[in-house]
Amino acid sequence: MKWQKYLLTMLQERNEKKIALAIDTSTNEINQELVQNIMKLFKEICPNTILVQADFKIRQVSSLNEADITYYTHGKSSYTDVLEWAEKEEIDSIFYVTDVTGYFYENLTIQSEVFWLVPDEFVPKVPFGKAIRIA
Image (cartoon, rainbow, N blue to C red; front, side, top):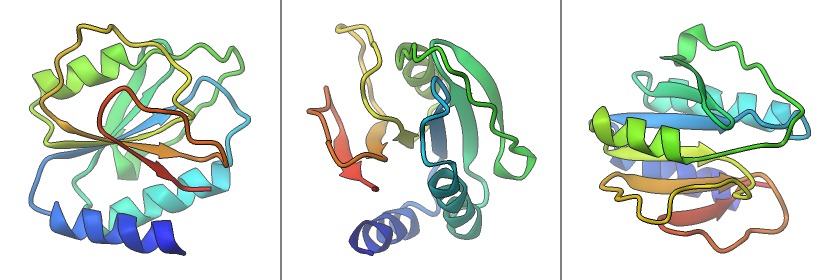
């Protein structure tokens, strides 16, 4: 329950900011019930959160209410498109549900707060931002 309280507090502190929740859809080996519960929390606390579904490219950008997540099995993931999109859209905070095994351009400049929500026991070192184990 520790990560849930931490995430709840973070969302409450950012309620008036522009927030995006990105879901790495490159694999269907993710705990889909966990993702649904995270989406439900975002809906309740920050209902204006923008949902981004992406693998090696952005698949869909929508509101949380219109969300129907489609997962793929190829395992290829890149964070570059989502992070560049967040900069262009002036997103204040982006929460990215991923195992952090994807690719990103090393010279990518990020102004948004980035929180990597890792649904795994192992949390790899993140390139920037803060990793939060949600397993």
